[in-house]
Amino acid sequence: MFRPWCSLLFLPLFAPACAPPSVPPETPRTRHAVILTDTLRSSARVNDLKDSLAAAGDRVLISGYAGETAAELIARLPWLLQPGVDLFVYDDLLAGPAGQDSLTNYLKRTRHPAEVIFITD
Image (cartoon, rainbow, N blue to C red; front, side, top):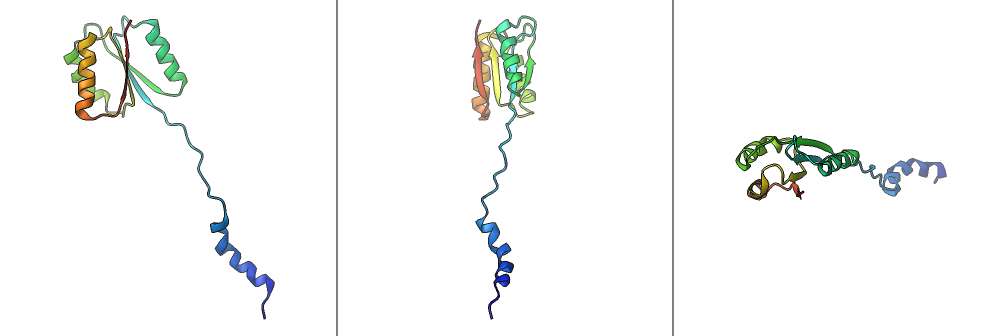
């Protein structure tokens, strides 16, 4: 004899398959950005960019010093790439076009996926 309440015992077996999939809410990913500029002569445009990146939730590091050469910049890049940099912002005031070429060549050579933005004043 079939009892209707017995069919309720099988409901938990089918409920997970019938339930809508639970999708976890997407959490915003924090980008790591490095602004390569001469910190003593950085322009208002660079400071505005830093503020806008920080306001968007990105972690921003400013690196560079007066008189830095392209070779010194390249020597520091392995250290700057350690935290997993997603974005480089290169200010032409740092080491000029030679530094820009060195940065792009280094990232291509190491196949680093970081995006690069160049600022010239």
